[in-house]
Image 1 (cartoon, rainbow, N blue to C red):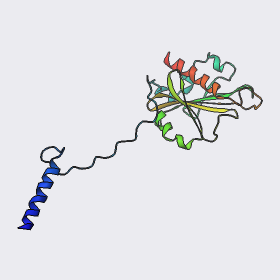
Image 2 (image 1 turned 45 degrees about the vertical axis):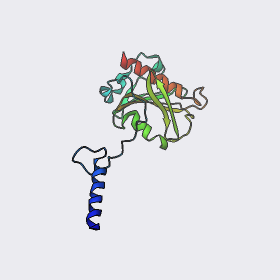
Image 3 (image 1 turned 90 degrees about the vertical axis):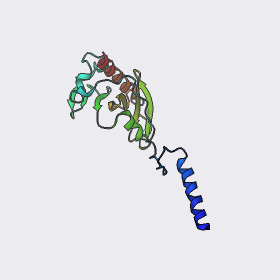
Image 4 (image 1 turned 180 degrees about the vertical axis):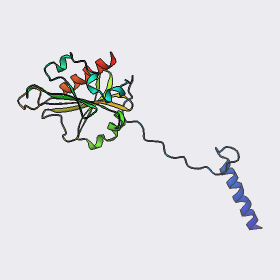
Amino acid sequence: MIRIGLCALAGVALLVLGGCGSPPGHGIVMATPPPSPSRLAPEVPLPLEVKRYATEPCSMLRPDQPVTKDLVPGSNEGGNTCVWRARTPQQPLMTATVDLASGGLEGLYRKRNRLPYFEPTEIQGYPAVRHDPERAIPDQGRCTVSVGVAEDALLTVTTTIADPKTLNYPVPCPDADLLANAIIGDVTS
């Protein structure tokens, strides 16, 4: 008799617990998987169509742009990279790449802990990051800025100044920002 009473009591408990918050007919509630990690990077406000530039990166920038007036005209090197070579060691070598494979700005934010230098910024209203995989500050004549131009695409600009006596050598990021601004201005016009 006690055994039957305990079984009835256990059955009622299961019925009560199973009915709490569950749809009718479902006595066992499965745990839901944890939500995906939250977004780290800012959203791209107005995505740009840049896929066509992945194979023709030099066409992103008009040749008459003031930012490249003292540089050798851009040449497509490495498939998705355009290179503007310096005429003298005092002028920066500039590169621009359309990156469609790394996961966009979100992919860059996800690896930010492995980058000694990671500084969020903005280029013409687009979220961007200045970063360096080797140094904690963008000095010694080199700076890279990656701009989120679409959720799955980055425009990455790098400037490199060879001569340490050049005025911009200790602060090369304004040159990278200038080229990125010019490219986005041309792509959006």
